[in-house]
View 1 (cartoon, rainbow, N blue to C red):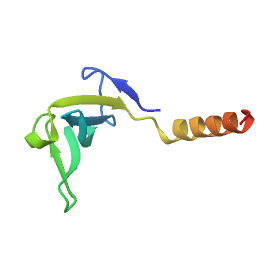
View 2: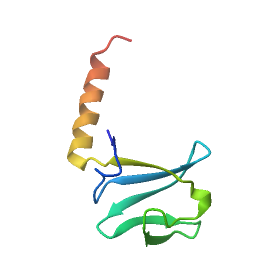
View 3: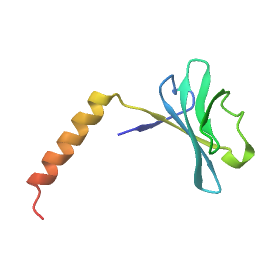
Length: 88
């Protein structure tokens, strides 16, 4: 469903994931003016530049295109139909 993208191809609405020690540490949504993400347990939403995050969130970045709702529903229906038609 979400498809990985290069940093250069990422655009508003896409997802960014921060990894450290081979573990997903943080995620955000790319906006026209930076990244929007939730920090900490209190749930505060911040807008920040791509690398302006705490070091504990990691420095390995991955970008993914986030499909629209109609595409997600289409894919889910197709997968459900294929699963029903498959032998056990």
